[in-house]
Image (cartoon, rainbow, N blue to C red; front, side, top):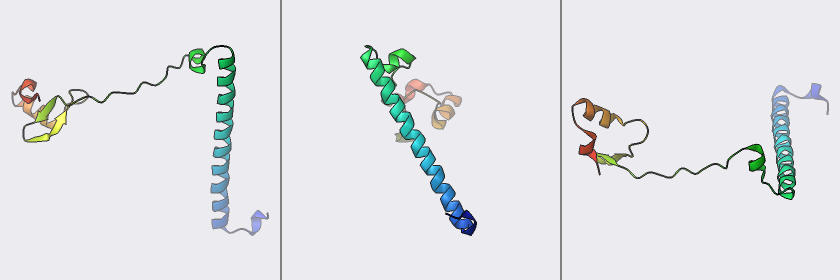
Length: 102
């Protein structure tokens, strides 16, 4: 392939394809290495997570709504994270969170 005869668009397309091929190759190599390491750990009676100290990711449970906006009951808040604007405004006006319990 004579790169000097290619147009700029063709060169950029080729560059993009090469970058994708490299990323794909590296990903396959990582997966293969990980599979070999997991197999070796299993042979020795361990999991790879135990040996590396990596705990399996926990799935977060979805919390049920605890508070509802009286102006729009479909606008709810679980009580976790940042307070919604409607709750902040109501509390600034002197209302208590207990008033909004579902």
